[in-house]
Image 1 (cartoon, rainbow, N blue to C red):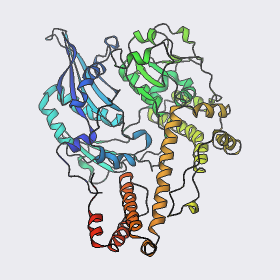
Image 2: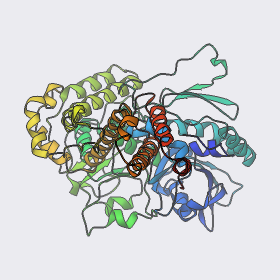
Image 3: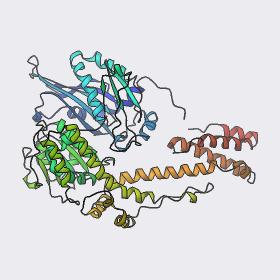
Image 4: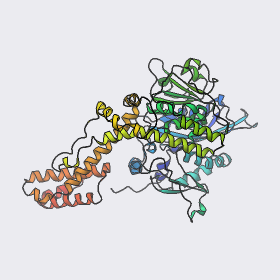
Length: 560
C-alpha cells in the first residue's frame, strides 16, 4: 500500500500525543503552564492537572515518578491511525496501542523554596501517549525533566525536535533514539517473541555513542511491587484473571501506579481487557461512576492514595493495602491470613489483602519458599523479579493452553475451502464441549497445582478478559480463512473459467476480485508471498478480455 509522505511532527506523534507542564498556582491550584496540548484534549485538562500531582497527604518531597491513565472522549479521532497500524499488528497483546485511553507519564518535583509564597517549588513534566511503554517513558523523563526544571522551555523544544527525528516504534526493530545529548537504545518486543524471554539489546562495536541500553520498555519490578502482599500473589493472579473489582491503597502515586501495572501484567501474555487506573483521584471524571453504591463495583483496578477512599470504597470486594516499598532487604510482612473487609477502617490499616474471596486453586508453597530463600540469601532484586515473572507466565500458560487448543479445533479443515464459494465460518465456542476436553487435556498436563480448575474456567468464561481474548483469536482465525480462500482463488485458471460466462458475470467477477484485493490490503491478511501480485495480474488479465469501453471504466480507481 503506498504510504503518505511524513509531515512535520508525524514522527513525534508516533511516540507522544503531547507534552505539558503542570505547576501549582495559589489561586487556581494545579494549572497548566506550558502546553502543546491539542484541541482533542482540552476537555480533559482539568483531569490531567489533578492526575499530574500527588495528593497533599502523600508528602512526596524531592522527585517522584508515576503514571496515570484516562479515558478518551468518544468524539475524538486518534491521529496517526494508518501510520501506526502496521506497528500495532506485530505488537504483543499487552503492548498494542490503547484505543480508548491515554497514558500520562509524570515527573513531579517538590522542593523547599523560600522565595515562593507557598514555600515550595511544585511542578510536573507530563508526557501523554497512547503507548504503554512505562519503563521507556520513565527513563525518558529522567533525562528531560531535570534539564527542563533547570533551563525551562528552550530545552523542551529541543527535545521535541529530537523526537521528531526518531524512527517509528515498530516491533522487532532495535532503535537508537537520541534525546538531549543522550542516546537510548531499545528493542520493541513482537508477538512472535517467545514469552518469558527478554530479547536483550546487545551492545555492538559501533555503540560508543549509546548512553543507555534498556532491556525492557514496559515491565515493572514484580517482586518489589508484590513484596508487601507476598503471600497472596496466587490469589491476586486469580482476581486479575477473572476481572474482579480491585482497589490498591498506597502511600504515594509511584507505589499505587507500579502496583496496578504489576497486577495488570501478572496475567501476561494474556491482555488485561478491563479498565485500570494506575493513579486515581477524587477529582476524576469517573469518580462518581466508580464509587457509586447503587450497583456492584465495575471490573476495574484502581490505584489510590487519598485517605478518603478508605471510606468511599469500603464496599469494594477486594482491597490491597500497600505499605512503603522503600524498606528493601527485609522479610516480607508475615501477613499470612487474608484480612476481613470490615477491619479496613482507614488508610492507616496494616498492609495486606482485605477480601472474602476463596481462591479456586490450592496455594503453591514452592514459589513462596523459593522467594523467601532469595530474601534470606540477599538474592539480587532482578533475579527475584525474573523468578516471579516466570512463575506467573507458566501459571497463565497452563491456564490458557487448553483454551488455545480447543479454539484451534473450531477452525474448518483447509479442504473445505472452495474458491467459488464464500469462506467457511468458524464453529461457535461451546462451553460444555470445552469443559469435556479438560479431563484429558487440561492444565494438569503442565501445572503441579491442584484445585477447582473447572470452577476457575467457568468464572473466566464470563469475564471481560475471556471476551477480549476470544474476540482477538476469532479475528485472527477469520482473517486466516480469508487468506486461504484468496490463495485458493489465485491458483485457479480464471481466464478459462470466464470464457463460459457472460460479460455481466465477467464484470461482476472483476469487481469482486477488486474488493478482495482492497480487503486484503486494508486488513493486512496473512497471505503467502506473491499472492497479491498474482491477484493483480489475474484482475488485469480479466479486464483485457472485455470490450474497450468496459476496460476504461474498470481501470478507474474506486471513489473513496
